Length: 115
Image 1: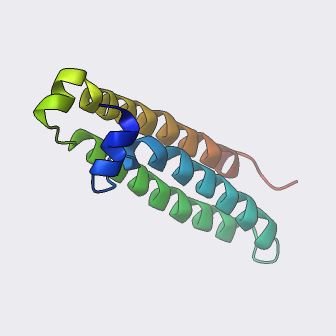
Image 2 (image 1 turned 135 degrees about the horizontal axis):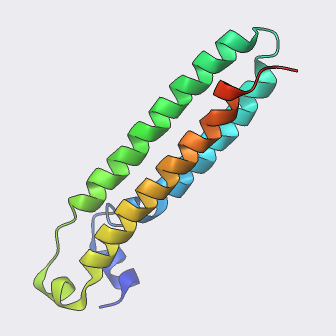
């Protein structure tokens, strides 16, 4: 059974562990860039608070994607093909990788001072 056939047959939650973390990270990166440009009036303290809040929301979303990956249920045909194992392991690995990327996006805001 092909992956596309499985996605068409599923209820849509199969693709969330694979595409969720990179999408959440890219939206987080865009939000951080927009916050940096928009908060020049409010100052550095508000910028840090806003970016920390956005980061916590992004980490919660990535954690939810990891939970969906771990909760994948498979049919007997998919279990023999190993598709559910792929989705589960790739979803968890992607969640860990993009969770680290979200934290590294946060680091310059916490460490560097305004010039």
